[in-house]
Image 1: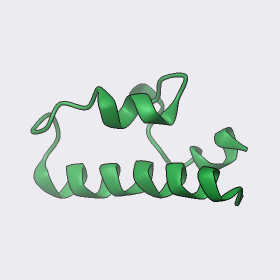
Image 2: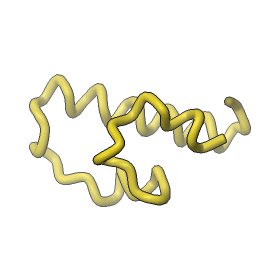
Image 3: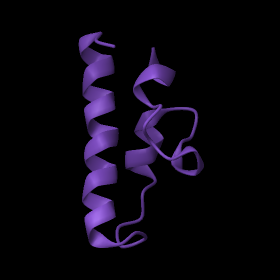
Image 4: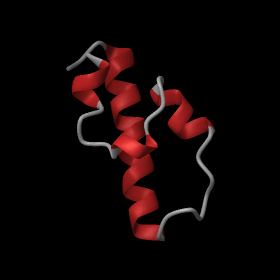
Amino acid sequence: MCSELAVDLPDEDLGEYLYDCIDLYRMGSKPRCEEVEYLGMVQDAIDRIERGEQ
């Protein structure tokens, strides 16, 4: 299920756990518009996993 939710996220940014993407992310490492979109996508995937959605 995690892999299905993470399919839209860039491979180079994914660790074994989606939480790592948030915890280890360094603010300012991407252009602002990409950063907001990326972090939102990661958080959305985490939220969906916690709710048991696909």
